[in-house]
Amino acid sequence: MRVITEELTRSSQSHVYIGQDLLSHLDALIPQALLQELVLVISDSHVASIWGATIQKVFEESGRNVKLINFQAGEEYKTMQTVNFLLANLIDVKAHRRMPLIALGGGVVCDTVGFLASMFMRGVPYVTIPTTLLAQVDAAIGGKVGINYEGKKNHLGGFYAPLAVVIDPIFLTTSSERDIASGLAEVVKMSIIDS
Image (cartoon, rainbow, N blue to C red):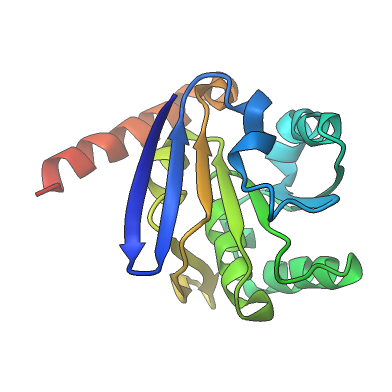
């Protein structure tokens, strides 16, 4: 396993965990002081249908209850309407300031859950588990969060660092060739423009 500590601000760090089989050790990668009896996992309908049961099992094996909340998959659902739906779910389960949100999915999920975490109760911790290569090299890292607004991409948002990013290549086994190509294109782009 490789661990990278990213200095984001003077008071904030985000740990990026990269390695094989991290999924089965997920519970250990999140600070135990933050993990509650109830774990909130937020995903989209596509990713939840593939990985939701696996994530639930990982946390349940460590004695935690899991609430899996999912919204419709697709860029067109990265909206305030989706955020309102998620907020209603958080209020319904009595989520509180020390209960981290777990974002499981691609860029839309990472951006939306990060935005939600930044505004709920003036900021709650969150963890991203990116499931696409593009999200693993871009959306999940660096704390760029946001949603689309009235047709404008990422028009609402900010910078709010995740507590941790867990990158496990196992998720790429369910990615399409097109998704892999998009992620590799981002890797090449970043390599060219990186100073």
